[in-house]
Length: 152
Image (cartoon, rainbow, N blue to C red; front, side):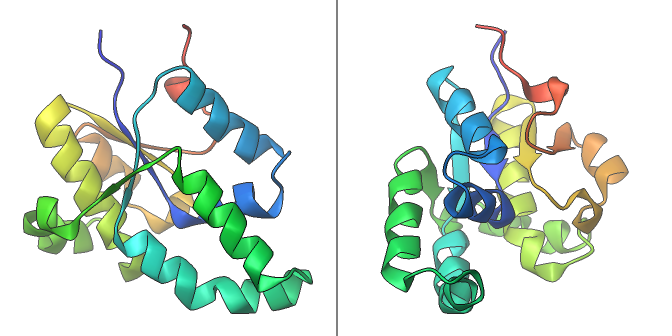
């Protein structure tokens, strides 16, 4: 049975970048190594660029180090152009509690349409209307959630 594609939220990427040897980073790498298809909407790069300097300042990191780590982790992910999921944006806006998360849901809706199911990997499940998304064959999960662990 085909594994559901995974849409990775920016907060998971940031957790992985800030603690490259941490649990979230390890989980993301494990999913990749076990063959899970990991995706981000193109919007993610723009959102990272918008917040990177402030995060680097707050964490005492060199902004170039943060950007380098971000670019490295992008090698694990397929960046999907907005043209591929644009038709789902309006619907997605109704399925989130934070409008910044609509592109992740729109991409998940697109992938669920193609593959029958999808996963949104996030550290902030409360930003999503999980019950309504599950009705659309989209699981909203935290890193390590047993529903998305690969057994290969």
